[in-house]
Amino acid sequence: VAGALGRTMDVRVDSGATLTTFGQAVIDDGGSISLNGGKLDAQFVNINGGALKGSGEVFVGTGPITGVVRNLAGTVAPGGDDVGTLNITGDFSNLIDATLQVDLGGTATGLYDRLLVDRYAFLGGTLAVELSNPAFSPQVGDVFTVLTATEGVVGEFDLVQFPLGYAWNVAYTPTSVQLRVTGIQVEAMPGDFNNDGKVDSSDFSIWQAQYGSSAGNDGFDFLTWQRNFGPQGASFAAVPEPSMTVLAAWCAAGCLGRRRMRR
Image 1 (cartoon, rainbow, N blue to C red):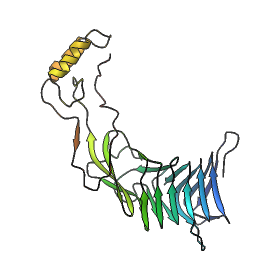
Image 2: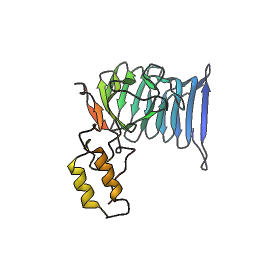
Image 3: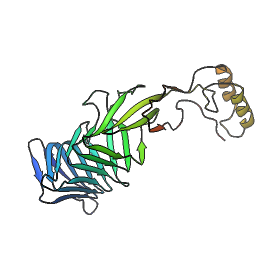
Image 4: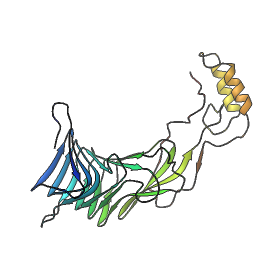
């Protein structure tokens, strides 16, 4: 399955239908196979620039040779455009140039994407995590089991991309991958020019050193500092990480909603 001349091709398999190939299924650039409750049956599935997405079942290697879904350089997205579960009967491998994409829309099962593998999951490449529901705000302590493999999880993702504004850790158990929220970025105090979570004399020194250096560094910044001077607030709320943590990441590009000093 592949696109041509700058176009895309999507093969959709609806509920009750099965797409069967007597060998390997190859998904190249511009191509995708979307499971809408349907099934894909192949000896191997190689994703090389395209995408395997949606909710449904993939059977690989149902004969004497164990098959595998190999994400070489494409995207595997359980749920597709919606939140859902993708089941793989066989092995799954996510290589260094590949991406596993999961969406989080809530904490209950069925409100976030899951990849369920009935053998081994060999991990590498990128795990891309997105929030799919604008009304959902993860809370500290929320846990999402986004991948399970009955025979075992082998390796780890090389890169994990998280939504902005939260601190996360990734826990690799023998048979699963879990995401946990460990902190929430909160709005910084106006006048906190050095991002340390408080408005104090250090911020005044920064304002003083930069006063008049550009049109935005003026008396208004001093008034902002003066009105908020004191030990107010912290820049984030967090809880201690559990001992099973193997990766912790802040995914906040900075504190939003405040006036920044400009050089």
